[in-house]
Length: 100
Image 1 (cartoon, rainbow, N blue to C red):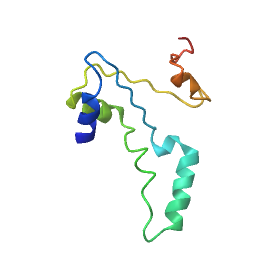
Image 2 (cartoon, one colour; image 1 turned 90 degrees about the vertical axis):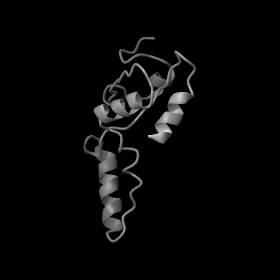
Image 3 (cartoon, rainbow, N blue to C red; image 1 turned 60 degrees about the vertical axis):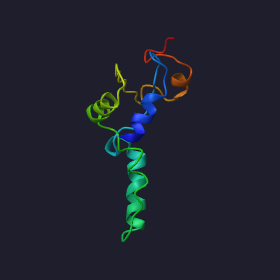
Image 4 (cartoon, rainbow, N blue to C red; image 1 turned 135 degrees about the vertical axis):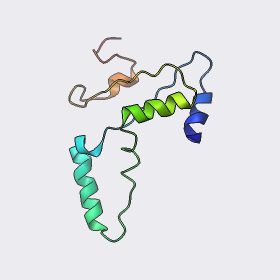
């Protein structure tokens, strides 16, 4: 929570804060397989580093955390790799429909 509060204080009033998170491991099969192999390879003490990037996949939880941190309007957009095989459109400021 403290980290999100720090992020929320950075934008100027009326400014924009953009956050990206990965969906759950169960909808990311390539990473899920990698995680299973790593877990099996270190059965007695498996590393948990893949849990972090996938730890904020619950939209309701993340939205509430952002609101509780003082951020105003929360807008969520789900982007699927099958919809957009290359993430460059996000960096170029294009919408989900492919326009500007």
